[in-house]
Length: 602
Image (cartoon, rainbow, N blue to C red; front, side):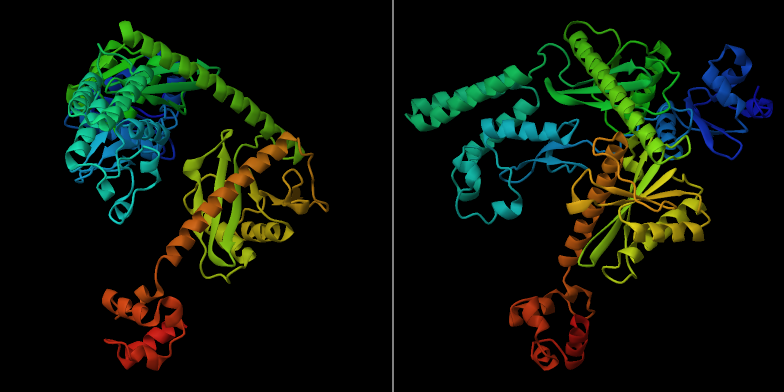
């Protein structure tokens, strides 16, 4: 029985498309849904609740408010629903989190087009092929195309300043257009061949290469003919390995769902131009109690709200016809077709995707069992309270006090939660003061968690010894979080893995677990991830600092004056050694500006 009376709201709902949000007692989103007819869809929840699934009945028992938004079309409702799900993270929605952008293979619009990978917005001056499921698939395609068509892959800064061919030319992976080793016409022909192949027009690409080979042979240019013959052979081998089908749609996505215990996996196979580009696995959250049809519907609506769908989607069984019709009408304005009962080649594709989903779900189930065993072992080793689930770990990274960065990584739900990682650029602390840096990071982290009513960890790991643990205890006490368990992970003798000592507040001696102990393996995994994340942030910050000249921060010193100063004194080191009078001798540098430059540099 719902805890609020929906009659008043239901009476005012229109027969129009839109999005509805069911809210809990604290105003949190419990569920977000879209509807072609808001009144009919929302009313269906309250007509006969006993006929609903236990999961939906549980959700309705927690509903305290209902909000709706009317949209102009179901397509607009689909986009709004997806945005709200990603921003509100409703407890009862199936959540597919995929923050990564998909890479493309790009042929640039230069006179000698460059073959490279690309992420982000697309530029009309270039040609793009894809998307690919991951960067590895793009790299493999580039390597294959280098062998066959030998297009350049170097950056413009390298290409424009070559005086002789590079190593790629010597190993026959590039025709060296940078130094004129190939004519404009021949390079353009190679670009056309690569474009045809990427579009799935393999036969035409081979025919063009064969015509060029015969022409070269007729002109008794046997060396060129031999190279073209090798290209045809290499292209034929690639076609045998990568070609999927010559009869059905050349561009398609194949989506299958599989269960292993409580683990659900959705496998997405991408086929473009008749070529299998690879696949990607998705593991949705909050999927317990849903069947494959409902999970696939959630995946299609969320995934293709941000990605352009191909003309054909081959989907595993389970989708209801109403869901298919709604998705076809809302995705890409109805220009796609969803196939749920494939035949011929498509049936083979779907069987392959289903098998991949099954294997991935089983692997994930095994990993989760291992992680849960490690977590239980950690709980027992630390004599912690039951329900130890969420662990946060901090680490500090710097080089002799320069560009100090603190990292915070999160382990929750038996996995590292990359989307919840945070970095802190440490300022206002004495360079090299690790204690001060740790205090700064912990204070900023948990002040924000308290203000925003975020999640607190069950265990806080600190990469360090008694000093760092003491600082952590002081910060937490100041914030009223003194009950939070803190453990320091001190490096063992000779800093060898497996010899770490655990510093636990209230315990006189450090705890040293055996090297094979599963709890130690979990601690090492989390600590190493914090270390990696901190070093990555530190290197990026240090690189940015070193690549920014101090001169750029001085008002009155523009690009021309910087150039004059550096040229006169032979670089920044010579400039540092110059006196105020020396600086004032440079054209355009007044005595006042010379003094300001000197003071800034010193």
